[in-house]
Length: 226
Length: 237
Ligand SMILES: Nc1ncnc2c1ncn2[C@@H]1O[C@H](COP(=O)(O)OP(=O)(O)OP(=O)(O)O)[C@@H](O)[C@H]1O
Ligand SMILES: [Mg+2]
Image (cartoon, rainbow over all chains, first blue to last red; front, top):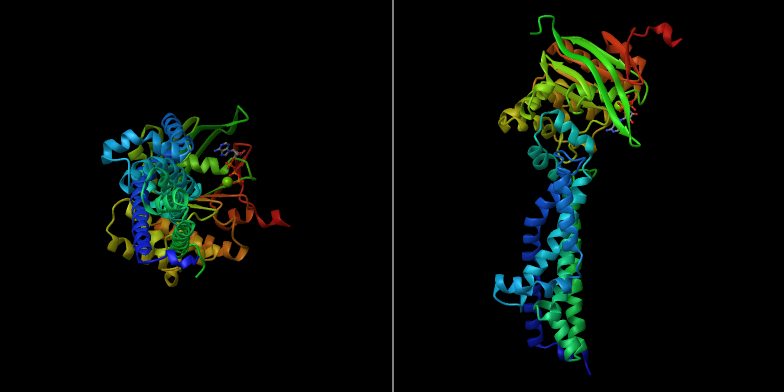
């Protein structure tokens, strides 16, 4: 049997739709996860007992919540979230229904990634800003975020590729997108070729996101020698 | 309030840090009066407590006990906002320069002006003037990674002066520089001091620095400050 026999116009349309759904799920989830996770990550650094606005009790509580939300495997999270997902999106099937669990799984992960990037900012530079009379908010906006930018971009790349991989996992519960196609054809219908091609598309997407993210981080980093 | 021209007064200052579960006294009963227009040196070996002392002067470090008065204002009495205002009157430079790596020279100098809401256009005009003052007008657009240590310190000095402070605190500002560069940076500080009437506090472990620039000096050892003489050349030989 010829491998390419299966790759007809219909399959290509299906793969394109799958790619669109996957990218949509991934980027919408990533953006919402950052809207929640980025401030959370910054708060974790700033309120740490060695931070610029220490509130150790708050930091401990938030850190604990983040750890709990990060603990369950994604598939379990997906299932546990069914009622909430249904309440928000009206369904538990398709790309739309994968976004809430993806966000809940990714936001704490994003918070930790952002936290570690922001922590890399040299304490001496922060202190210099304080010596110039910078307020905590000014330090966050004008020192921590801009100085950590290259590292934040690397983190965002990592988060986005991880979310994409998770979104593919959601195929197992009919989540739509490429993962769904791979499972439907490869696992339920033994059409291995389509599964392989679909997986290849996922690999390519991850490569492209990864490489462009790293490139963006490099070209925006002013520490490089020109 | 400051009839005698005392810019910085340190009264009965103690500072403790926890070390292995115990409190370690890093500064013990430090008393100092630093006057307008002088270059005041504080010399001591590594670990003596020099950085801690200078960091107490602008409350980057809060004293365990004792008082810091800047132009007669007791820093312990100030709320965070008032403290930030006092800090703006005290420029500070560091051994490791502490420039923002993602900003070029001119934007680093604009940084403190942004903090107080000076318009971008005015800030840049002032920053250009300062770049010229420190001899760096050619390097306006260079990023810190593209500058030598001495050049970075010049930018840092320009930044420290951006808000026209009356006081300049220097924590080992030349310790990362070679002797030639050290000399040129000290000359620059000396010149700026005369021109702007700055009060300068110099922290160092190098007798040569004290000799080159200080009007008065104290030495610090194990957190205890004592009067000291400006070293003379016979000291060296
Ligand atoms: N934040 C801190 N927490 C705990 N101990 C500290 C802290 N800062 C300073 N110390 C301790 O205080 C002592 C004095 O430190 P300080 O940095 O003031 O010394 P220094 O004279 O500036 O030394 P150097 O020339 O090496 O910079 C040291 O023993 C140091 O370990
Ligand atoms: Mg020191």
